[in-house]
Image (tube, rainbow, N blue to C red):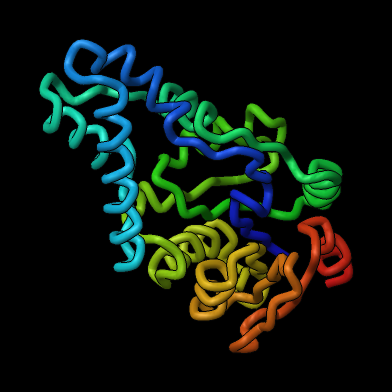
Length: 234
């Protein structure tokens, strides 16, 4: 079996999420002489609404590619160049996360069984930054590749996003089929519907015991580590 994981609330639990914790050091370094923090904070809130509108249309709003140039246009100066390392630092300031209990042990079991594992995430931050986040929490080594909607330009449940990842996987494992790929995620609207429409089996982390309104989930689980029995027993 080949497993593709969602990232946030699947592999990493968000303990706190505050974009302004990343924005303030960014403002201090690049925009302190151009605007007040309250001004850039308010503009960041406007851009958040813009991002939500784009998501409703199926598009991503990449932080480095699209958002940073908008700060430069608004307040003047050059567009801030940001490496994936700097992007990962910004992300880590915004998000306090932890690895779910028992996850590292499960990933280690899968790794020892040579089970290919991947991450497919809706995120405004590039895959390289997400990889660093995973590395910093000790689990990045388990994944063959991370895909982010920031690089692809579309968000889950976009079938093309899934199909792009599937195509890369099956190219690497030419004897494999979609039937051997399991997608694991916590959000029905993006993860489960997207995986189903792409022809994948889907394990839904259904912590709130919600109804599977379309019957798209192949499995329903309470914790990500519950797929251990599913994968080992397959």
